[in-house]
Length: 422
Image 1 (cartoon, rainbow, N blue to C red):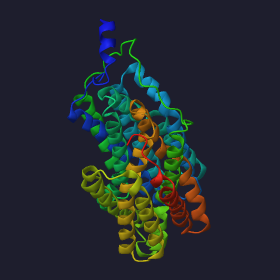
Image 2 (cartoon, rainbow, N blue to C red):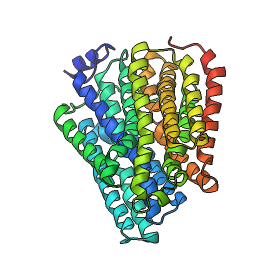
Image 3 (tube, helix red, strand yellow):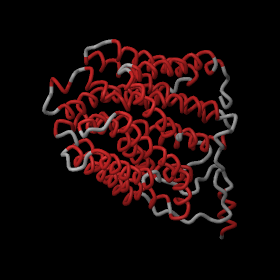
Image 4 (tube, one colour):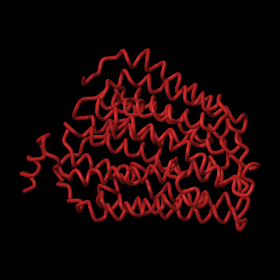
């Protein structure tokens, strides 16, 4: 029986464990919930920890430590998923994210009320956040493995790309959702992300089939090394981009709070106002990203080499204009431009990384590209917080400069290279 099954799996046209379209969409929904649960902290935690007496570097260090642990634990959770089943790990991961965010919320609320202060607050927040980095990274490798098993070499890159897009969409929708929930309280957005993660975990538990044992004679696609010369330039490119994104996302709430003097204009609820205004800015970015992704990229499928430098240039100009123009509506328009550029740049960079290898390796390349956001967010927030202490405009300017350099490289080098698999 095993020999027959193994021979059948030698066919590139037969998925190992097929999933329906609905079930694949549920995997994407899970990555959206994960992205939202991770990114909403940059909107809510940054301004509120100020009210609890913490400095910019301390806040960035707390988030960076958990992101570093998260990145380190991704491959380990991938091996756990191979042993105990993808579905179990995905459900556990979403529950862990919801519950660790809940613990973080309670600790932050205690700090805001003065129950915990000083070093005790810092150590408590670090302790709680490290559990997030330890327990919640399983969704990404488990969903990637489930999608790999559910697709063939012909549609694997598209399937894995859908999961990568889900994480990107979630990372924008999370802060945007903060704008809708901020009127109900400064901590309401965190409660929203908690409910979302737990609800999606329940949906996955009922909608996904039980993972079947893998036959011993069935080989999984081999992962690509980060040092593979075909994908290394694309990986470095994406990590650099997300370092720039991390600098802005970490400091934007502080930037808005200080620029518009929310402590003076909203003395009783400055933290809630900062969450609301920052959420509105991210909402503008989210609207533009989703409109371009589904209204243009998905339908037209443009040449990624051509639109990559255009998208990066838009992001660069958006960051510059966000700093240059004082009015809040101008900042919102700037982030509309950033969202448009992101929708052009991120899928293009991911696609070029996947297309740099043979068709049978495209799934592994897509999975490797998905490691770029957490890798970039290890360094970006800490760099941004350090620059912000020097000058409030520096993170925006530094990110614009970094993305601008990437735009020039994409225009002068990437756009002129032939598509390996085109």
